[in-house]
Image: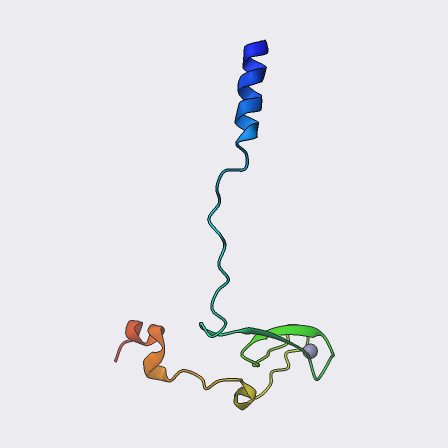
Amino acid sequence: MLGNLRYMSERIGTWPPEVEPVTAPEPEDGPQITYAECRKCGTQIAGLDGRYSCGVCGWVNHHSEGHRPLPTAAEDPDMQNRLA
Ligand SMILES: [Zn+2]
């Protein structure tokens, strides 16, 4: 019993084990999540690169308001699954 307890405290002494440092993703890597208020109903909504669609009232902003150009159809990975 006592030996068992000592074994456990030794195990706890080595806790926590070495952990890999968590690296933050690159800010310029892929689309960024942005937040805004719906201009129709005022709900706080999240979008990608400044493009929003409100799930409450259905409002969407124009794609030209996005922070970066949209990918072309050729860059769409789903295009490869379509029949010509
Ligand atoms: Zn809305």
